Length: 141
Image (cartoon, rainbow, N blue to C red; front, side):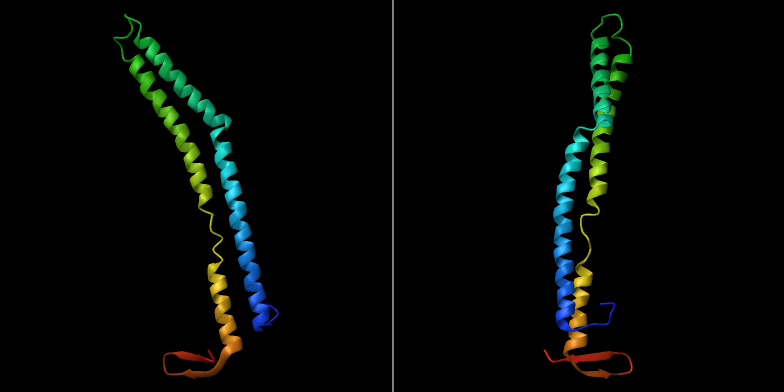
């Protein structure tokens, strides 16, 4: 296109290549997305946080079962914060997967649409008319 070759066959070929590459991008993205989602469930940081959360809840329950100590707030504090730590670990996983998913679309559709316009303008325009505000391209189609 930079060479100035706007023949219909050339532009259609480039348009087709962009479509094929966009589809390949989407397929690769899906594979990467599944891999990242799988890896995020088994990441060390996430599992350590989940483990700490579970341990904190378990210690809180254990302390709550001791007759003399259960009257305090330590057991409730550990159980509540243990749940919060587990939720934060889940949130980390989801946030990362969500952030990655924002680049799902290669946004090439605008180029493909504009290539249709290039084909029409350079290969099918028969007349150009204008008024004081607009330019009109009259095509043979």
